[in-house]
Image (cartoon, rainbow, N blue to C red; front, side, top):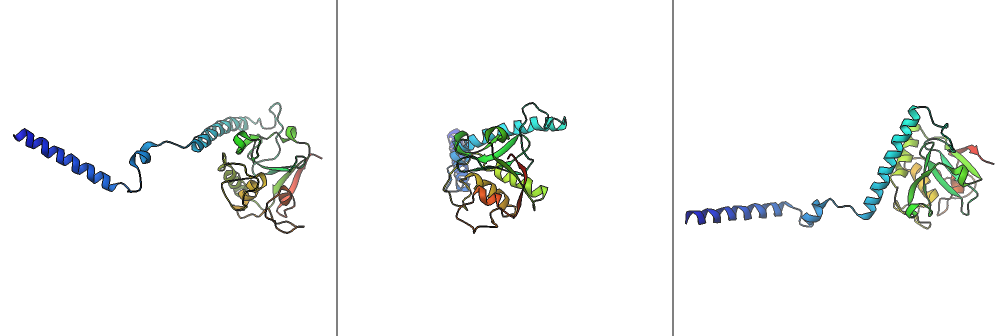
Length: 217
């Protein structure tokens, strides 16, 4: 009889503990989902891109320490961190922001998945009419932060007719413009035309806050 009573007391205690833990959980959350740790397909994709990028950075840091920038066979990169590249011989013109001597960040429908992505800094092979722009009022810190902002959008979709102020869909010039806009630098303030509904490569080329440091023609 005492054994049965003890088992009953233990069961009651366990039920009370379970009820207390359940009450502490937020009523709108599913504990299984909350603690599963599973990532969405998009999150997994972006994590894979980030892992690939980390490996790339490690290799480039080794090259930089060895003084190899610009000496690697086949090197065709233009500009340095925070510079802007504009191709004027594509159908709609195209813009990218330079991460380093070997990599740019750009939003382009031909990127893997049609997303914002890292691409090789090989514009001399991809285009004929290229302008390299430098953002004149930007400090080294602002340039670095602009690149980091663009990098944080890796994996988000390319959308040509997206709203200027949205922050989850990008076309090429909007991505570059927004990266510097976040640093307090306006690249769309044009000298010769009024502000439009879209930020175009021509807006950035015509901006009083950029100047040409490289031209292929």
